[in-house]
Image (cartoon, rainbow over the protein chains, first blue to last red):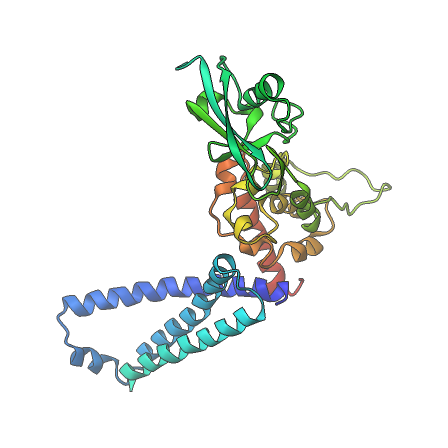
Length: 112
Length: 237
């Protein structure tokens, strides 16, 4: 991977971290609100189903996690397991796809 | 002074070896380098170690003292403990006893484009740089490095990623990137970007914690990350 691509990964990780910080805060506040309000699962689903705003928010959350986690894991694999090179990056690309698929599956489950 | 004699364990050998015990007389204001010198001159002349100036300028006497990399000429025994364990610097190949091979350390300075490349010619007038300008203040903050290798030995990322340029080389690159008279910024940013460069730093701050000159390579590396990011976004890299 070129040094430019490596620098771009660093920028992507920093940017996704900023998005994640906001998303995690909103997510936690929402959980606390729902639990303290005594909402049931059905009542929560009634609010999320068909709601484009929640769909957009959680899609952004999943996208940020999909970008952020594999880049961090890339360093961990390189430093702790000495796994570097193309095979590591391909494995992490697959991991990113798995994160995106499982995350969006959950998002769509509470939207549709 | 708790005792008139000081127990010292000193590393003997190269990559494989063992600590050997010595006893040396205690003196007021005794430095760790004084202890090593006493052992070499009075107890065991085969002990190999390196020093030159003895006043904290040359950067050649750094060793691991009770698990911590330090400049031994300015480290008082009183400040370290009742007993001493002295070994070679970590993260560098041991030649013998307390002497490490510094070639890789300084080769990385060269790889990080650590040499000044002036943009002016001898026909030009002197550059007028305000010492109060932000760039100059940033350069001044890192310019007093003596190349002792303490930061390099303290860095876990160097241990995990042997290609990593390390705090000293990156600090040097940052002082040049911040130097308005230097004309090789983009070339230097290319050299320090990526997995073997500034982006490998996790900001553990061990280098800053241990630097005997109280410099902050961590801050310099963060500056390099910002400079590289700006250059990438502007398409200059």
